[in-house]
Length: 632
Image (cartoon, rainbow, N blue to C red; front, side):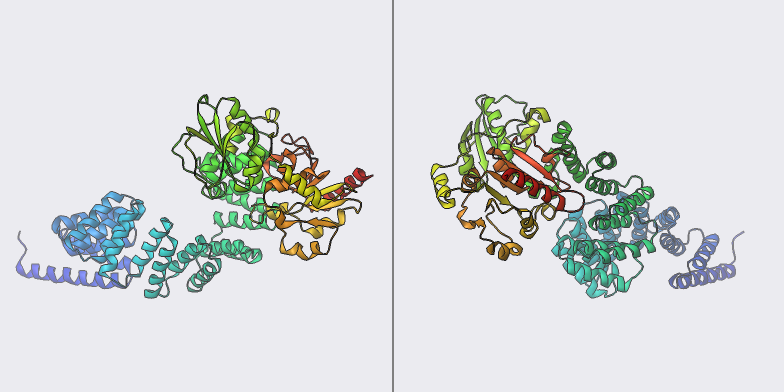
């Protein structure tokens, strides 16, 4: 039976009242009550558009995404020109990770309403998730063009810029987000991340502190703040920041591993390992924690555990560049040259290492031992420090034996010294124009090319050029020898990654130098901390700027009875010249010096003096004892 007009009118009033009541409750945040009102409407009128689209929007808010898609699809079947329905359904699809569906809905919303700022914004979010960053930027630009004070759009555009490593530009967008929303804690947090990436650490710390002032309950901010404090060397404060992050989120595995890194810096190694272990228990596939733990194991000489932990990190993340690189160094240090040199090639895939080793792009193919070299020209080039070049130029002769014409490119201070190496057709200073060649290989890839093992390390390079006039000059400079001459190198380059551990101050060394020797400083540069002390010691001859290049240093080394050096290029030069050389090694040495031996398979004339766990005292006392024996 048809409903009377009176009942129709009453029903319409009831529906209108329920919709109004539901909307009021909805806007007041009383979602459960609002949902009941909308559902009552739909019980009375299943095709009521407003109830469908409002309940669909509410379902997105309360994270009932499947229901939202059903409701909004019904609403759009009734009215296919409603931009809000498309936008809300897009949000439901995005939450369900149906990103292409979401993108399509946002496009339809914009087609219906081109000035719909929120739809442009949401479209940008989907494109960002799809890593279509240029398109995401365009969507955020459109949203901002429509709504110039759109703080969230500035913030998300800043996030895209940060993903593109355009950190300065991202900071500008975070600043705009903060201008339009001064209490935007996440904008302060991500601005801090951008400052940290730029190594503007104090500004990063300030931004994190502002984020915490606004929202003291975000564990990520405290953890990231701890990372900056660690980089600033403020380790105790960093620990407190990590502690707060863990208090806020007791299962925060990243904070535990980050805290482990600070304990590592404080040389509290047991606590470092314990924190990494906790992180791994919380997240068994946490590759970074396995990697960080490996580094600590190496520092305490637990190499089997270190290797095992590196392998675990790589199993979880096969493209983990830092883990592959550090695993290669650990393998080489332990004498596992076969796998070690293979993994050493990961240096070219590691962005931070590539900056240090001098990554180069070549059109010519890389030679790693497979191709025949007869009638070929090959470029062999230095890639790391001066000492590395001196050590590995021994492989030039092996390449020459394969029948190649060799162009050798080295650092400018080494050009004259290495210019007469056997097999070199032309030597070029790094940075100068190169002649044409067929193949290329960096010097430190040659051990891999020749499948070097401990028993097959080639002899040191022959025919280093030590000019007669240089020998005459330095012989005259030193004068007649009346005592055994000892060359000294107690510090290396300050930019070396392990300089803090490998270098000494002159004050540390002096008490262990017996008087009955003639001491000559072989360093060209002296650190400010040593300047005054060296000037007060006329018994240690220093020539500084008179050492023009490595030919001068080589000539001076040739006039020594003994060279005592920390791990620097002079140690490699002296060892290559077959001069008796004592190398002072830190407790965790560079891989080429291996472990648990006082000799070197790379240099027959070298004797190794290894630091103990605590300090240099016992090592230097051993040096002093050996010097007394030498001078007796």
